[in-house]
Image (cartoon, rainbow, N blue to C red):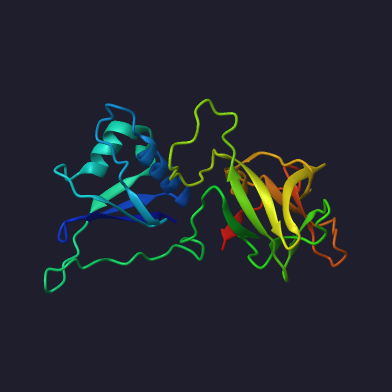
Length: 249
C-alpha cells in the first residue's frame, strides 16, 4: 500500500498541483518535518513555507521556481529519494477553473494529526475494537477493553537533544521522536510508566520512541487480566509484544 499527499500551489489555478507518493504515512511525516525545519541561513531551495491542512493536503506558495518540491528534494533530501515519488498533475474543468482533486483517505485514521501535546484514544490496528483503558487510576495497569477507553496525551521529549525545539514548532511526531504518555482520566492526569513488563499509571513516566506504536514494542499479555473481566493487560518489550496501534480522536 502507498500513501499519497496532495500538494497544492497557492496562486496558480491551472498548473499548481503535485502528488507526493510514499511507502507509508511515516515517510510522509518525516519529509514534512524535513521541509519545515530546513531553514538555516543560506539554505538552497527551501520549502519551509508549506502549510499542512491535514496529513494528506498541503499547500505552498507559488514562486518563480515552479519545481520547488523537486529542487528541495535534490538539494536537501537526497537521502529520502528512495522513499518519495513526485509527479505534477493538471485538473482542468470545462471552465478552466481549478478542478481541485479531493484526497482519498487511505484508512480511518488518515486525517488524525500526530502532534506533541495531542490527546488520542489508542487501539489495536488488527483488532480495532480493543482500546487502552485504565480502570484503577491509582497506579493501575492498562488493559485492552472493548467497552471503555482512556484518552492519552502524547508529549515529545527533547530533553536529551542538544538543540531546543524550533520556535512556533510545527513538527508532527515521527518514529524517531522520544515521547512520554499522560492518561487523561476523570480524576485528573496520570503519568504512564512500566512496572516489570506491564504498562500502568505510575509515579514516574518512561520515555519511548514514537515508532514503538508501529514496530511491535507494545503488545498484549493475554494471561494477565487486571480488571477481572477477562480483558488482557498491555505489555512493553517482552514476549507479548508485536502489535501495531492506531491513534484516533
